[in-house]
Image 1 (tube, rainbow, N blue to C red):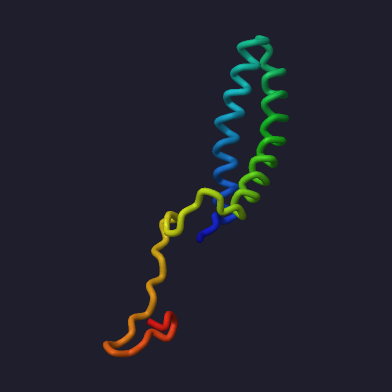
Image 2: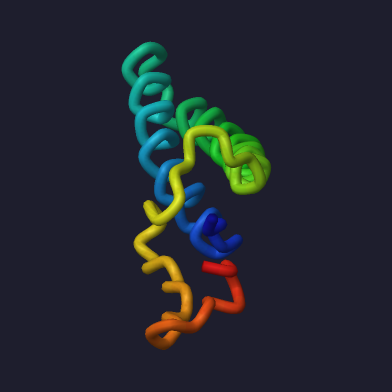
Amino acid sequence: MSRESRLRSAYKALSWRLLATAATFSLVLIMTGKPLLAVSVGGLEAVAKLALYFLHERLWAHISLGQKAGTSGEEPTPEPMARSGELNPLTGD
């Protein structure tokens, strides 16, 4: 089973946060018409939720629920082949 690296989790958190913060900024600006308020809310929301998302990703990197072997893009390591007539020392077959 493979695990995502911390760097990948950080990049995913950053890209999602940029998109979500743009949405928050836009909604606050549309609802209030106050750019300074929209920037303030968007900024606070970005910092808080970026940290929370990163921690959430790292937690889920340690949970195997729903993961299947070999779906990470990595090829599974094949077992060594025994010569004809010999037992495979790893499997006993």
